[in-house]
Image (cartoon, rainbow over all chains, first blue to last red):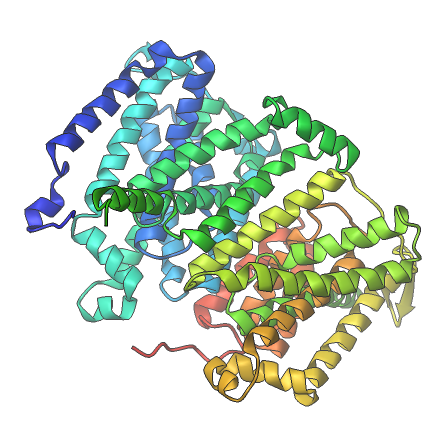
Amino acid sequence: MDMKRSYYEDIRLFSSGVTIFWFILLMSFLLFYPLVFKNYYVYMANYVAINIIVVVGLNLLVGYTGQISLGHAGFYAIGAYATISLMTLAHFPFLLALVCAGLIAAAFGFLLGLPALRLEGPYLAIATLGFGLTITTIIGRIEMLGGRQGLHAPDLLIMGFPLDTDRRFYYLVMLITVLLVLFARNITKTKVGRAFIAIRDAHIAAETMGVNLLLYKTLAFALSAFYAGVAGGLYAFVLRFIEPELFSMFLSVFFLTMAVAGGLGSVMGPIAGAIVLSFLDLQLRNILSIPYIGDWLRQLSTSYFSLTGVSNIQFIVFGTILILIMLFEPMGLYGLWIRAKKYWKTWPF
Amino acid sequence: MIDFLQMIISGIAVGSSYALMALGMVLIYKASEVPNFVQGEMALLPVFMAYMLIYSYGQSVFAAFFGALAFAMLLGCFIEFAVVRRAKNPNILGLIIITIGLEMVLLGFVSWKFGADQRVMPFPISSYSSIMIGDVYISTLDLLTLVTALVIMTCLFLFFRFSKLGVAMKATQQNETAARLMGIRTHRVKMISWGISATVGTVAGLLLAPVFMEPYMMWSPMLKGFAAAVIGGMTSLPGAVFGAYIVGIVEHLFGGYISMEYKAVVAFAVIVIVLCVRPSGLFARHYVKKV
């Protein structure tokens, strides 16, 4: 049904007029969103958008290139710390600092990509995991970066215009998110993206066909790290305060959960995954105040479990999602969407 | 010199608990080709169950430990049977994600049940008493860990060498199709591998619990065990043990001579170096995929 007949049809940004219509609708929704919704929901949108950036970047690495990374919180931390310290110590303007932070993260991504050339499967998993842990440990020990106490974000000015509320910051975050998502979507259609997919499907065959593994594997790591770095820089200004504990191993796992839940190897899937799971994450943080379920959980916790540990239900929910998706729909939400679409298009048959 | 010896001894002692985790890891990797992130939590749940048996049900320490080990066996079998086996045409990424998911579920469950408080596991041997060998001190608990680790390693060696089940396990690991053709129920053998691995992990957990007991207690030993297994090559039992002792000793020497602060992460530096030199670990033949 979605048969592509020529190369130019494949690389077009919008496959039909209907897509353009939906795109415009989405953009205008995003434009008017902060005017309609309350402050908390704008904050939520910023948080979701930042997660979208990370997950789209992570998906370029995990979904398209097939390299697992359990260390993305490390790149995220590098981005956050680099942005703030470039602004406070070197007095860079925000956007320049953000891009530089992304590039620093990309440089670390390149470094991590080098051993990844020779590693696969469990070896790569433990190496990236170790990377993430090492970064947070090192950052926590550097006095200049605030050590364990953490850092406060400076005031944010863009060309003299202060972005001091969530509402004002929202437009900047959304602009960057849309640009980066479009960039990711386009890169999958280029030579680079095809090389990534070839490496994922059969790296030896890809090498035989002339794909430079050294170049493209490190590029995938660097690109993915760039996304995480930029997102980290933005995150620092959403929270306005960062400390090493924020960037734990569980954050890396959370990013991976979002990518997997959305569907690896597609651009739209991870976005859906990031939206659904970030929303769930924010809801589960104060789980006891959810109507009905909250009261029931409070009773259950006091009689059988402990009330202090109730926030850990979050882990149970995310873990269950990971397992169920891997067991029943490895393509995640995107896979469900494809199946639903197919079902309706071919309905009576 | 005495400092040096002391550090080596402490390194070996802590390496023993890593070795137990690494052995569990390798057992499962050989059976199901999963890097098992749930290894730590498969031990965590039985350890907390032992704690509950002692405090809520008034059982004796030995009965509780025995109960915990039996429960670990069942838990490992259940995880393989109910989750890992059900994965549709699993690739390595999918399996890693499944074990991470399991890990989160079990960890969440235990921390929901017990909160984040520090607890103290009653243990027949005090963790403060120590004995002197020559000029170096070793705490009796460390000594017990060391001896237990050695006993378990020997048992595993004998098990794989002489028992029928052990040989069947080795056959399944080497060539599953051939093993099934020879009449081995490979699924059941894999399931038992998971059970044994959880039991071995629980032994490590029970030995760690008197010193430090809270829901995150198995997290660091699990990662160190994983690192050790990777150094040893993921598929070699002696390699895993050797790797664990390397990790333990390097950690202590690094902590003593260079920096106490970075001690926790030095294991990962070691594995990155080892993997750069030998991408499949020290003890495994480099795996070359046929095209």
